[in-house]
Image (cartoon, rainbow, N blue to C red):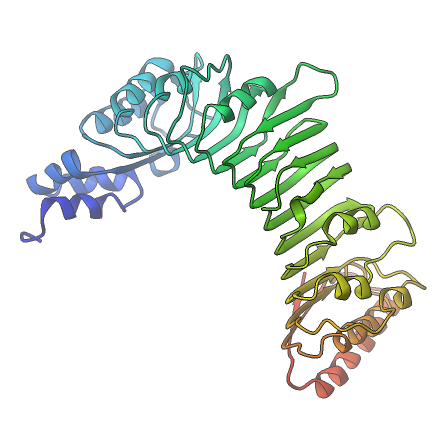
Length: 417
């Protein structure tokens, strides 16, 4: 180690992850202390790494002493649990000391009073900003401008819809935006959130209390909606969207225009939908390679996913996953027509409540996939079962055994909950 350059030692210590480990390592020798002071570029503070009996004041002093001993810090992460509430003064001091060299800042710490991190770090060279448990007010795009910021994440943040839009506009190079459990203050009674960005490529929205989201993004490639209850979601943009992921969402009106024409992945789960309307949204995505419809709830009783329509609309489909309730009389409709899913090599099928229709459905779907290589069966098994349920499961097991003998080239796997 004596022959290892001090710059390399600093780089190694930057990968330790925990500031506690860095402090211990810096006590090894003079060379390592020098490496920490002048060549450490990443530092992470997490309250879980320290003794629980450490007071808030002691934690503030520890963080202050550590940060002020390091020059040229590029990445700073501070994640403190809710049992600690920092004073504003030391947090401001940390930001002012490091802001000129910082490229990445992740701060999830409660302060009293609230610290305006945008004001302290605006007009600097931050590329990644991850804020949690904070209040953002009075955004001034001309002053609080982040010309280098590419990744912005806001979690448990209180902000108005107007300030959020102004903040996004203040980031002319932003590529990724994550909004999680925001408390949105809106000017109108309909609780509308409007966002505009010409550089945004990834947008993730989770647990946001608004009724309408209107997103204008000409270069969006990935859209992820999670745990939302919306009257309207509208995407205004060009045909750049590649990945559409929707989980635990209820939306009355989904407007995406021509944005879905070049979709490659559609993953929908725990979603309340009107299938014809949703199918109309994605049916022009001829380049689609993966389609997952899992645990969906249909608004109409006679709705079901039509394999014939899937085969006709998505000729390049490789991975197909379907799981929903099969009702009596709907099996034939699901398997109508004779078009084949020729490029599908992985098929995942599942049930939440097993029925006598599941076995024939699996067989019918396999027949439509002549080049199938892998079949995954997903099921839910409750602890207490009636005699009828046990008999149905036994019949399905026997059916699958016969199916495996017929399709010996297919790798069959089972995943039960």
